[in-house]
Image 1 (tube, helix red, strand yellow):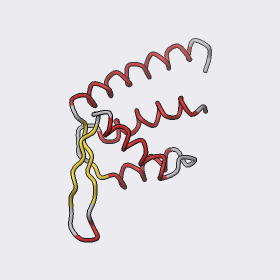
Image 2 (image 1 turned 60 degrees about the horizontal axis):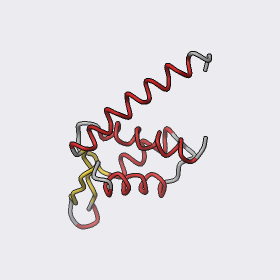
Image 3 (image 1 turned 135 degrees about the vertical axis):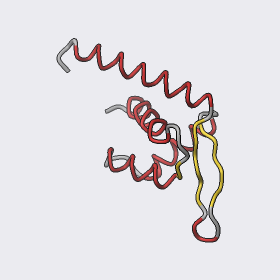
Length: 101
């Protein structure tokens, strides 16, 4: 899988994993690396940071002491991006199915 393709799929999966509920980064990262074993923790966190920097995710600090965590949730822009990515994924699957993929 090319880097660009993987990046798009990872972004879609992370947005979907967060969906309508707030989740902390480690929880999302573990889910992603379980589904994509070749993806490193640093890659998953890099995608979370990129989604935050592009305005698709909001971040808040939670917990105290050693249990401080970053919690992520979708912004309105992130929700729109998720809906667009879902539609693109659906169209891609339909097109690929035409070729027996």
